[in-house]
Each structure stands twice: as structure tokens, then as C-alpha cells.
Image (cartoon, rainbow over all chains, first blue to last red; front, side, top):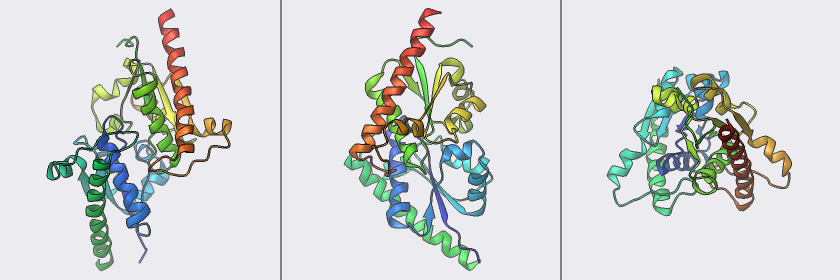
Length: 137
Length: 139
């Protein structure tokens, strides 16, 4: 069986710190928590219909990490007919962790980084689940 | 639809897979927050596809600068495809050629050298904003 990686796709949110939280969470997963099992792709490439990006999200299970309810990452994966296996939205985690107030787009504050860590751990667990299910199929 | 006066739109690629994408995003925010806060606005590029007609009207309302990390030029192409032709494009990889001593590695948190490069890109964006506003004022 072909070894698939899970493609973690954060949104490109630039207006608020929520997008930065999603991106920092993604880098924690792909660079530190699950570097062998995950990778990412530029969301703009998907938006543009780049052939390699389309092939990647159609062949591998994807997790969308969106900052806000506009859910640009999820919608762009769906529009690309990608294999959306799971999706998370930063605002949902924020509701469960009301003491954390993320601030900063250029550089995330410590509370935002803590929120990113919580999201990264939750998504990392999901990565293992998804790959385990793929193996069993 | 007519162009809004006094504001320039900036659309960056944000390329999450490349360090140059992070530079494009940080440079854009530096312009919005510090260099030209009263003259610039932005929009998340993927909102062109995920959003509605209001988002897709962006480049028809504001003269727009695309800021791209790599030669695939997603911000330029995406803005043109979904909204309107950008007035100018700034390519991070081209700006990097002028400053070969500034190396880019990190996608997550920018080191001082990378922040210096982001500042150089931001200065180019700000200069282009001024040129566009100067031209539109003359019209």
C-alpha cells in the first residue's frame, strides 16, 4: 500500500490573529509533532488550481485548519475535490479556552501560541487516527 | 463600479509552504500596521473563492498590489482571475536578489535577518503605494 501523508492546510488569514494561530499550529504539527506523517501546501496554489497541488490533495487525506467561520481552507479543499478527512476552526477552540486571548498577526503573543499548541495536539491525534484508518482499509 | 480614492489594496500570496510566503505576509502586515496604515487595505486571497461578490469586487474597488513569494505568482494570477488586474506585482524572490546576504529559512517565526528582508519588501510595497496614490491624485 502506498504511504500517504496527511496534508495539513491552514488558511491564509491575514486580517486577524486567528489565521496566525492556525498557521503556527500547522507548523508545530508538520515541523515538530508529526514531521514524518504530515506536510502542507500553499492554499493560494489550490485556489489557483495548480496541477501539483490538486494532485496532492486528491491523493492524500487533508485536514483544514481555518482561522474563522469563513473556512477558506475547507472550502478550497472541497472545491478542489480534495480528500477532506477532518477540519478544525480556531474560533471553536477559542470558545473552549476563553482565558486565552490571541493577539498579533506579524508575531503571535504567548497566549496565542498556547492556543496554537492546543490545536496542534488535537490535530496531531487526528493525524494518527486518519492514517490508522487508511492502513486498516 | 469606480475606484475608491485614497486607498490601495494589497493582496499577498501568504504561501504557507514556503518561507517566502511568510515574508510576503509579514511585509504586507508591516505596510498595513506601520508604514501606510491609513492608505492600505487587504483581503485573504482564498476568500476570492470562498467568499462572495463583495470580496471578488476588491480589485475593482481598490487599485491593487499583488505581493508574491515565488514565481508561480498566485496572488497576481488569483486577483486577476477572480477580481481584477492588479496595478503592480512585487515578487519576494526578486527583492531577495538585491540582498543576497539576507537568507530565508523559517516559515513560522522570522529571525532578525528574515525580518530585515520583510522590512525591505514592505518598503518596496509602500513606495509602490505612494506611486499609485500620486498617479490617481493627478487624474
